[in-house]
Length: 73
Image 1 (tube, rainbow, N blue to C red):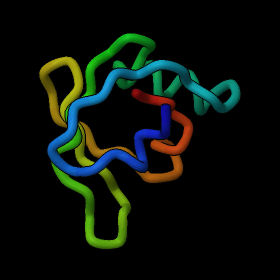
Image 2: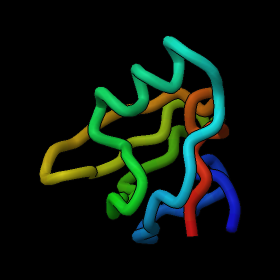
Image 3: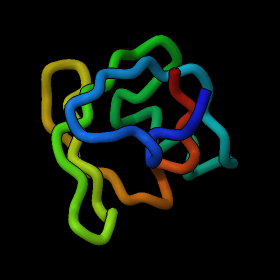
Image 4: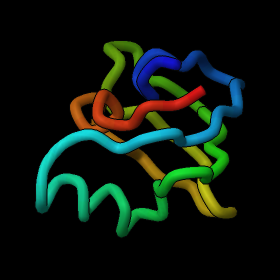
């Protein structure tokens, strides 16, 4: 198990746990990133920020700081 930030382009992973507190955690959940959700990593910017993912059928860009709070496997 690692974080979403560590996932390479082209990989599909499953969300296992969200870390972080209050508003940050709520915002991540509001984007559809909840436990058991499948996430496909489309692109990672050259400097690693942001990460482009596909979740629940839509495309999403997420900051690497937020991606560190999403544990996946």
